[in-house]
Image (tube, rainbow, N blue to C red; front, side):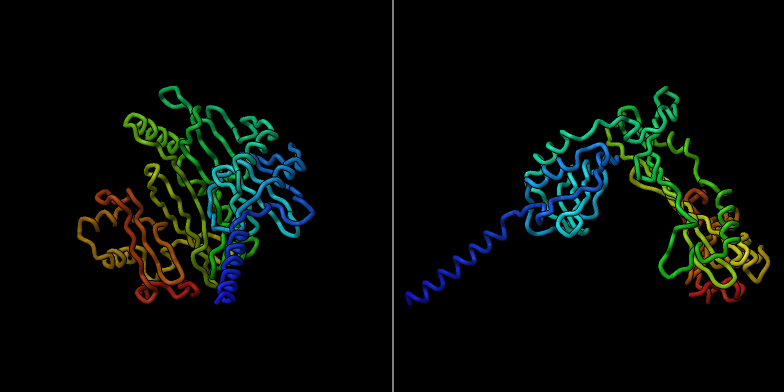
Length: 372
């Protein structure tokens, strides 16, 4: 019995030792080669050439992190004040400091840094002073409002967006750079890259003329109006965001279709979508009328669609008055008709109808049916 007890005690002691060891933090930097930092970002600005990277590596070498990784992604850029990127041992090592403080090799898991506040403060001591221009200020008083207050235009490095802020730092509106029709890809669909060079030029020229489907000044003023209303009522103001993207939706040997999608803020927490479809000749890139894809004259197609909507007479009358060809879009499995918010006077939200190509067999030309 004594022997068994001794063996059991030894096993328990070993287990406790193992658990204790595994619970202890480990060095952030592994191996004997230290940490070779090749990029330093401070408040979104690349300051690699303005800081002592060897000193930064020396700071990091004194700290430890959790032994086991935990999921941390996705995260917002605003949560990171300092980002270090380099090589430790035989692999890349990235360090994030700010609202989140961790070291990671592969997203989405990372090792949380122990005593991160102390490391953060050491690093801040040698960070350079950043001017407003460094931080992305592009134009002071880009817009002046009726009450004399104004919004400055900022464009933070690598953000791909214009940001309109008040003098107190409040962000009114962020507008992401428009994307497409090039460099936008949808899995399983052909893209702009599949067109000939001449067709690409024609499609690009079409979208250049189309431009933005919103007015920047109006959107900044709308944001400021909401900001004032929130301030007066004591509510928190949530910054507005705008995006405009052009993506491929469907294609075949004859046509290629794209859809422009714009998300405009209703207020800081909700948005409305504006969609505009377009069909192009596959060979020339010239835009084609949506009505030319049908086997019936335009007026007969319109009546066929309104009959298929199955709505009451008053709403039908509104739809008949509102329907525009760009409200119609082709997708691999269906044709959709979308009335955007505000286009139908009696409706608060947008309306959308979808038809399979089998449904449209009697009215749609075969050349208009996309490859599926």
